[in-house]
Length: 269
Ligand code: DGL
Image (cartoon, rainbow, N blue to C red; front, top):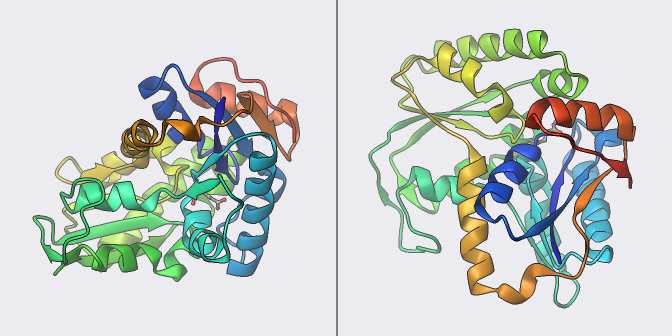
């Protein structure tokens, strides 16, 4: 029995880690499409095709429920996949809604009309594809009014993390935060809208300053997954847990082991 977790690469490990801590009796099958990462510089059609292929692979390995632990895929592919229809008994969910519900102080599934919320100035850090989709702003507009969002497209950060070049990743994060602050000098909250970015959370927080509340997705998605599985216990699937990648398993395993600080062994997808 395993729930599928999908990301273009290593970022979804931040979601997997939180999910494993919260749901210790659930197995997870993690799919990293490392051969095609980063997704954030691809066009929407490309992201859709790659995401659809990877999710179908997870379904065929016995996962009934797949979490897109990737904002870029959630922004560019999730709605289209759901609209085109998924196989019977299968489900695919994204990572935007739990984050936006937390930001707008809503309980799960509260679909009441948009209302004023405490936070007024929000910085969004995400990949170029997520920023240009405006999916975050759209989901926010369904739930809140009067929130000013300034989006900063963080080119290069995902590549640096995937390559294990954390010095470059830190320098890029600092320069993206500087660029954001030139547009919005005093954000109240910052959204790490890419699952890779929690790996750089300290650098974001330091560059933003202690007064900015930084939201990242790991715990929020894990909590919402726990709620979902409680309501749908039949979605645990039949597959086995593990780690698969379209990239080089040894290289990806080394990086993953470094990030999660425990031994992770990927197999070829
Ligand atoms: N971790 C991903 C996200 O949340 C994808 C990054 C990428 O492949 O560019 O957006």
